[in-house]
Length: 91
Image (cartoon, rainbow, N blue to C red; front, top):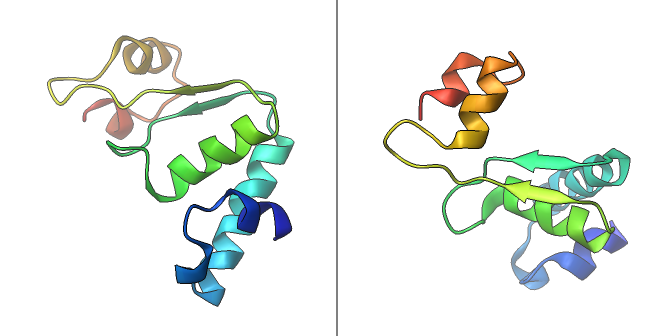
């Protein structure tokens, strides 16, 4: 929880339930060797927070917001490997 509070840009506005989710995000980042993420534009939300946590822990992070017209090259490459569900590649 301490790491989550140190990384959040507005800790005074976070509810108790949200802190549990943010602590979970830090836990995910702690266990990762590499983070491949598809965050919302602007990098906010839980995915953006997890990416910030991973960077703070020294993990390599690749964020790919993609393109509204069919997705990015990374998204297509992962889909070809059957790593990303088809619904995630259709954005």
